[in-house]
Amino acid sequence: MQCPLCQKQSSQHYWQDKRRDYRQCDICKLVFVPPAQRLSPQSEKAEYDLHHNCADDAGYISFLNRLALPLTGVLSDGCIGLDYGCGPSPVLAALLSEKGHQVSYYDPFYYPDEKVFKRRYDFISCSEAIEHFFHPGEVCQNWMSLLKAKGWLAIMTKRVIDRHRFKTWHYKNDPTHVCFFSEETFGWLAKKYRMRLEVSGPDVVLLQKLA
Image (cartoon, rainbow, N blue to C red; front, side, top):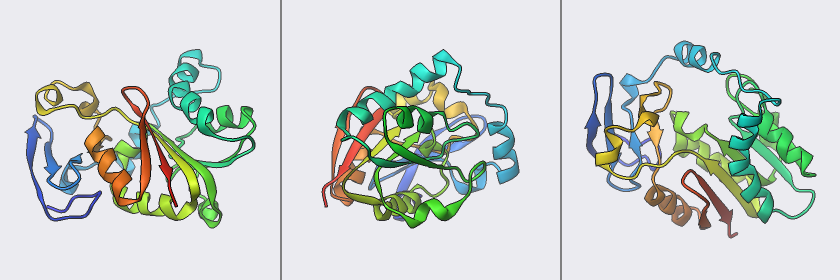
């Protein structure tokens, strides 16, 4: 079965629960749900419509700052960025804008304007979205074309640790979560695209494009 990240035909059974199967790529170590077991676009969006994150929710702001603070810590003043997968409320883009950066945002369901792909960026942020992507390899390839040299990619997603913990991991139970990254997977991504990897906490990574 083809890996949706590295697109190699080399994966093996990783885990199975009552609802879904999970496979792990032998190459990039991504754990993923087979395509036949993904939700339809309509069912997927219905799940997202249940989320009610907003800019006046202090807990949500604190959550997003787990990505925003380390990212702004490595950026110079007045950068141009893209928040990819912002959902119905582009709160992270607003937080980064408050820090003096010019931030556009994109979401395939809520803000699908692809004009944002016609420019290049100093940084791209992706908070709790990459685990939803059906085709993360294609998205990452697009990100690399949009990032300037020395640009930063900031991703927040909970990481796979090992098979034993995976079987009781709540994160896999969300039916919209179909791709699960580990530190090893991000290492593979950094090597493929010649990026420097910084692991910031249990669910945030920063990758800097070297050229």
